[in-house]
Length: 202
Image 1 (cartoon, rainbow, N blue to C red):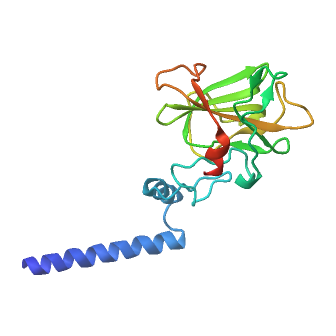
Image 2 (cartoon, helix red, strand yellow):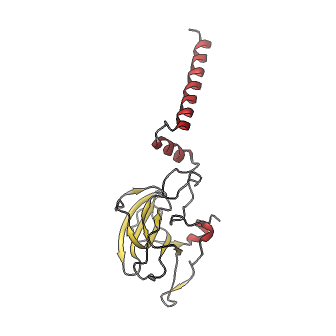
Image 3 (tube, helix red, strand yellow):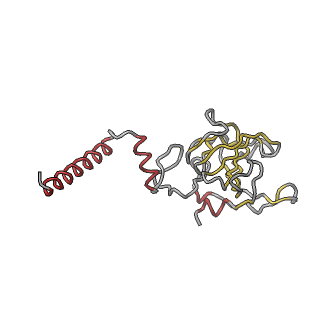
């Protein structure tokens, strides 16, 4: 076989194979895991459940309460707490009790912790280990959530509640972003960052 014939064979084979993959994906024959993997590695977004959409950019945080639009968020980061003794350094995302709390970003569950103020809380470390996402006042944890577990953006972590010092009549998620060192312990949370402009995308 000549070089020209070999090149023609390669081109035809590649074209037919690509067409077959496109048809398979469009008809639902391509496994869902492969489609999700392609969405993640392409950088265009992730195709994960619990409120995430394929349009979510790979570097963008999701609103960590299912069904809450970015436009509905309010900035309570600088609000006084504890009778004016401290600054909130988080935002409260209001939602009915039991609304799914979802991971704002991929990462690892560092700690499930019950505290007097935060009630049922989750400390999640980012994939680069430089950020802690803190979720508080949860009504409950998702059954399959455990310390050391790797989680995907949009994965259900628990449910909105009012545990800790939150008002029973105003269930919400207290959500904080904390910059830290990669080797720091989960409780050594470093510097707080206002989640409002980050979640609003500005």
